[in-house]
Image 1 (cartoon, rainbow, N blue to C red):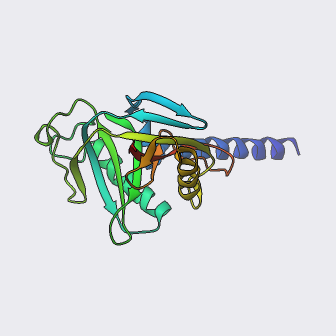
Image 2 (cartoon, rainbow, N blue to C red):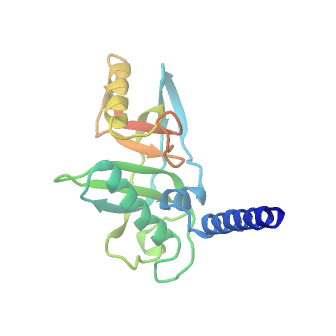
Length: 207
């Protein structure tokens, strides 16, 4: 009995070690690969209206991709493309610095555009050419955004709920919406409904 117990315990320990080795050896998910190496956003807070902050963003360049799928699936596909590009899938093969947040907003004909900033880039020609034609480099102008932070997972109701809260808050404040609502991720979405967090933003202008 003793020998049998020792053998079973050894097999269990070996299985546990093998499982841990497998998990540790797996590549990080795309959202964690991309956001882990991204610098914090450089934004100025202009005002606070209840739960909503008005922030000014800086002009610059972004790596972007367009995906025609449902919003959650589109985000995951886009994150993989952007993580591959910034991780070295371009003509120099060197990992690139990026700047949070990852931004997702609706595009034309049922598509979603997802982008991430490229700090220190002052011309499109100064950034490596993507190997994939599905990733593009775009100029991004400065904006004033009305931003609300929410908890949980952004889909399926996070974007619409955040947009409604922002519009209700800025009504009569002297600021008006001047663009579509967008999702902003500074960290990977939580796996559980009550975990994690995200931001919803709307471009605004003075009325």
